[in-house]
Length: 178
Image (cartoon, rainbow, N blue to C red):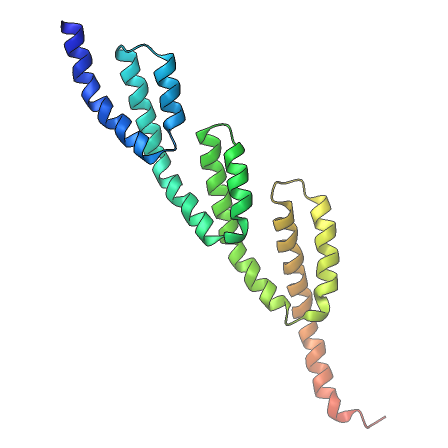
């Protein structure tokens, strides 16, 4: 009778935790695994509690995941596809932070892309450099890294062109002289 009473006392909070975990959805597979592989003794309750702690650790990353999807729509299909393939929660958490970081880095990249349109004559150089950098890079985000580096180089070259442009504009009125 004491064992049954003790298990009942532990079952009530575990039921609430299981209900919360089930309603959110992303930890259901872990609950099914626990249910199928562990006996209904005190160890079972500990595993439910551990799963709830993992769920609490997941909460900020779920918000970051939603922010990364909403903020970087162009990355969302790749992010979701890669996210599904990851084997465990720790790798998913790291991946979410990595994707959010690249999304934040995309903001200056987009600004530099707009700035690059001012120096449109540098676009062929930027494209050529992008292809070279893309082949050199071994990282997962090699296209993004190559684009950032080539755009920065194009802007650098464009800024170096400004004195020559100013000189050409100043010398325009004096073209009639030999």
